[in-house]
Image 1 (cartoon, rainbow, N blue to C red):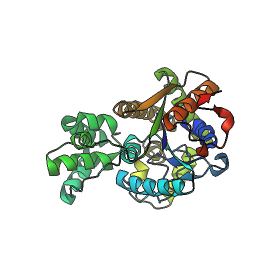
Image 2: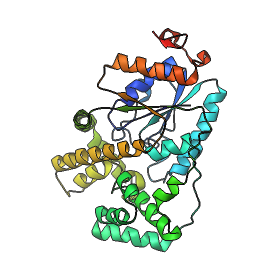
Image 3: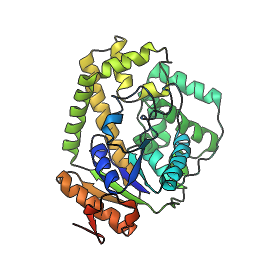
Image 4: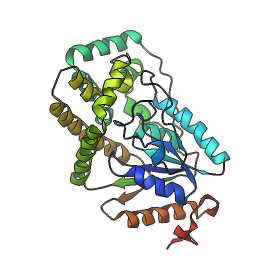
Length: 323
């Protein structure tokens, strides 16, 4: 299995298409928000006409009011991987949601710690009265590592992390550290990175483009569809901020600036998560695209010992050496 990870706006989508064509792969989205229908612009979802004929999986598979967990993703992705392999193609996960991707790569066992509905309701009420940041601070006090990885607006996962500690006495991070992290796959993980200032510049340009493409109208349609305003999907980056603007709680300019700030923070958390993962081959995106692509082909060829049955464009490869 091939995996391409990296922070938002680093260039995963463009790179993934060329890699998939060269290695006869089908792509599985490793993004926790792209599973939701009707949420296209704010999730930077690749449009069907832009996929260049490459099958993409785990995109548009549920409605925004439907909770979709890491365990759900693991189950769906595992099924997709089996189907791709059965077709003689290379399974290729592309995305930036660290827990989702890692849960598949290393076959995490999600413990059934039970639930405490009263506790959840108390935390939801606390967030409603004091704000998401205050709830997030509760998590930071007992599990700073998990708090660093979770956005304050991701209240469902923040509450779940608090609930796990409440029920078991162990933090979410302690439970994750207990995973064996042994992969059932022959695994090649490539990570994309770049200078922090350049990444932040790209993030701001992407958000400006999203607004030009109609992000406000997309959020307006979602709000008009009578979905619960506290639906998990509506707490995602871009949706919560623009929803606040549409409710008259701030100006569009203020919402856009907050979205840029929160997305920069999100990228920082993504990189923090990836630093804890193992066996990543890092590519600095400051190099030109062609050189980076050739470097990635070399990494894959070395890892998989150039299993040419997977390659549909063998001009990239010649006996294991990148031309």
